[in-house]
Image 1 (cartoon, rainbow, N blue to C red):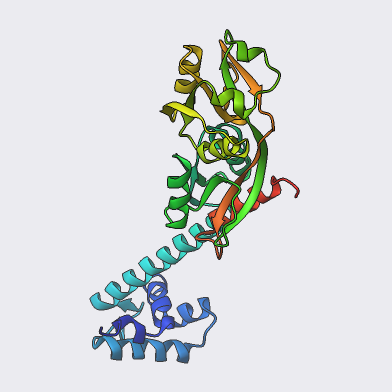
Image 2: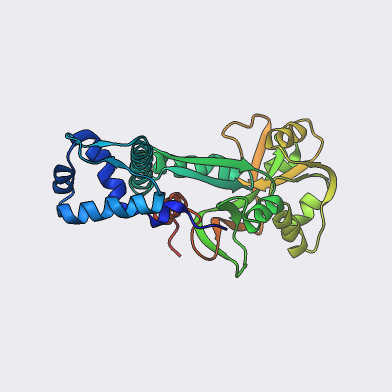
Length: 299
């Protein structure tokens, strides 16, 4: 690739030409830049040698630029404006967090109880920082993080040496039972009781935990339906089509006709914000991580 022809033009000449055009005097332009008149003359001569054309009209007062000199002066001014815009953008990135941060959420627990508060905390201080949230099931969410398609992901705590985790919230798995069902009168429900009736399996992120809880009790759920949306699970439970288990923080504030019952034994989990080990893709991403770290649970 050929060298950029502007690389050989002295930077001083590029700074001088717009000033000469405005002031009409090389000595005054040199003083404005705090350089000597001989140094200014030498820079102009060198620029003319590189360009192969005269850049100033000599012997005329006030000094004026040639047509080619005006072309180069306009280029220099555009470069100066670009440099100023770049400096302002970098300052906005530093001070106001300008940029876009992508977060993948594994379901309702994070999307309704964790991320809104985090986004609000960031927005209060960094008004130009944008956060984009996408919601999916647990495995696609984790894969998006590993693939680098998102900066962060909310996931249930796992052991993964490639990830750094910030624990943000603890909750428990809870059983959903139709209020008219005799099971709803129990203070807690165990795996044996729930394995004996039709079961609605959540596909919203807690499925591995639900299966693990049944397995610990030596049972397996009698799965009749597999549903991702919490509202759909509640509707099926309310209609008497089965019982279900979801995370406590995923339960809506109102759930008429459905009783939420603790499990026995209880099954706690920790929701974390995760990122890949290593540096941040942007200063905006680092800001979001620092903000989340300030809200993280104490181990």
